[in-house]
Amino acid sequence: MQIRKQAIGIFIGVICVVLAIVWLWMPRTKEKKELKIGVSLYSDSDTFVDSIVSSMQEQAAAYEAETGCPVTLNISRANGSQREQYDQVEQYVALGYDAVCVNLVDRTNASSMVDLAQSEEVPLVFFNREPVREDILRGENVYYVGTDARETARMQGEAVLQSYAAAAEKIDKNGDGILQYVMLEGEMGHQDTILRSDYVIQTIEDGGVKLQKLDAETADWMRSRADAIMEQWIAEMGDEIELVLCNNDDMALGAADALKRKNFTAAVFGIDGTPAGLEALEQKILWATVDCGAKEQGKAVFGIASALGMEKELSKEMELTDGRYVRVPVRARIHESIFLSLIHISEPT
Ligand code: GAL
Image 1 (cartoon, rainbow, N blue to C red):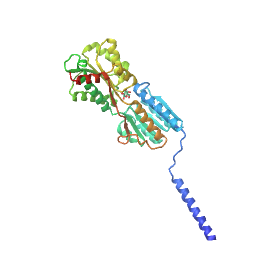
Image 2: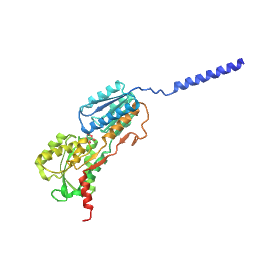
Image 3: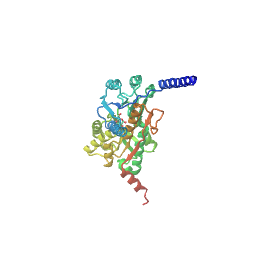
Image 4: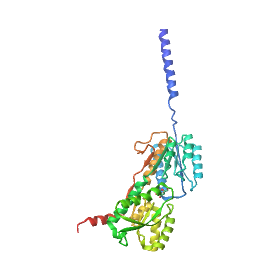
């Protein structure tokens, strides 16, 4: 009897020791009671980036309502200063934020930010301004959300081809079979400026429409600068300008402002699908734009930051390319009167 009691005692003791060892070795996941996400933006105002941020704010409110977990989404703006942006990220890390989302000022200069976040194990989500691949791969929880810039350009080019097929006489004002164009480019060195400017031309030429470049200039994504440049071009070249290719909607709207003021016409094409861009499309102020999915981009940025910030797996729905990239799908939006003319020209007479 005594021996049996001793055996039971030893058995219970061994079980307790085993359980204690297992408990000690179990990975500790902190039960987080709130989610704090820091966001640093490259500029004090940028229409497209601001619409990505609005989508993140909507996502944060929905997350809070769904999970009951309070979310802080702190937005700071670096006003074009890489130094200021680094300080903002450093501050978020020091304050124990769960994840940091960065819209880089200088996209070639992300390595120190990655090292900083990595040293404190804070996940980083870059968006809209793409760091070089080596910087993305420098840290473990480092991601990028954006679009495929070539695809946005290809769609803008396709929109020009479709418009030309449907209404050549309206675009090719002098009827010489060549489209005389000017191009308003975004910020120099930005991946979207470089790729959009090249691939739109390639797409149009590959589609068999001849182009003649009159001029190209950077308006830094800005409506007011594009307006001033376009006004200058109108003064110099007037009606010679048939096509205005713009790297984004804000610059397309600026060009349209100048054309309207000076009472000239030319076919203006944008990219982004901002609310103002889509409204201008409705009114046929723009011939086409490419919707770059600001809402989906905001959803993906918040989705990654919230999952990693709460030390959870990324949602299975998150479609990753090369393990670290989310490229949201883009859609061409062409003014419907062009499709109406397409239907019209394909009807037997
Ligand atoms: C581009 C967008 C521009 C501007 C820029 C800022 O993708 O088309 O409108 O927002 O990003 O990085």
